[in-house]
Length: 412
Image (cartoon, rainbow, N blue to C red; front, side, top):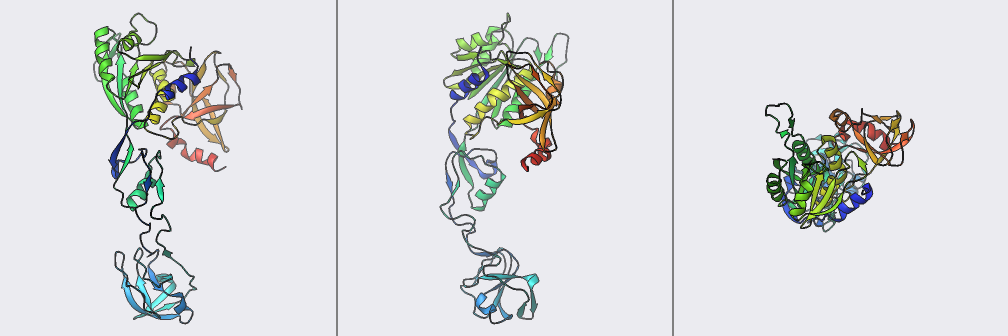
């Protein structure tokens, strides 16, 4: 049986970076840069005022507190080549500062009367002037290749007039559910049948990771149906099957994958849930065979498939780092396998605290729904005591609920 660490190493070492594509600015959020992006010009592009007020020369203010107003520059206006010595220019936020001006006096620190302004407060050199290039200089590297584009990156790109960027392509992920007992949600439920939850669940997880799901529907537990759908799925960047990889009489998935040219790299991992997980490649493309149990399928996706998808898209850290949480209640497990235990998470007195979200049987989906995280309990331990620290990771989508709590930890 393959160890958890070795299984993930095999997966990532057999996962390659995808090619790149040009994507419009409005669609760049969450994508990974495929090349370095440099600033085409200074930001700000020109000296401009940070306040509504009066552009002045410090040399004049050393002699006079009242200055005639020689002009007006609105936002979007054009500044005169140079300020007339001994005068002030009324100026609005964002407007270009005329050559020769070395400070801006805010409106509230001055009193205007007719065509004259009286400066009431002490002025310092450079006050309220944003200098060209003080944020970003022309030619400066904005984003290195392999950078995740978030809202601040979008803002920077837009501010520099960059309307598109080359980013890593998003993988297409074919998802195939298998089993004679399955029917699609919305159909009448009869005795002996189960709704196909894995397809919708895995598609949601794939989208959440930033990839593109392709639903292949349900393949019956017979060879022709499985082979047809599997061959179709192998045209995608990644194929994920759910169920049919155990040792039952009608578990044909691994055999048909082999007949379709998939090279199996491991089958069975020392984890619970998810022991029956298999992984292989086809023409360099990853093929994941996940267990059919919905909880097992979800956890195997998070631990194995998500890191591969993130690596394919160029994420700099495809494996989510573990945090450490203090156990509020004692937890038990059997020896021999790593247990991915579904746990509640909260912050108490500046510490992350964890406790079981319910019974850990793989057939109980509610325990997964109620969990904010997964505790990774090592194979050689059976009892984990109150007050002990255990490694955990926060489930995707759960961070928002914990954000205020986690920020308490980060502020420590």
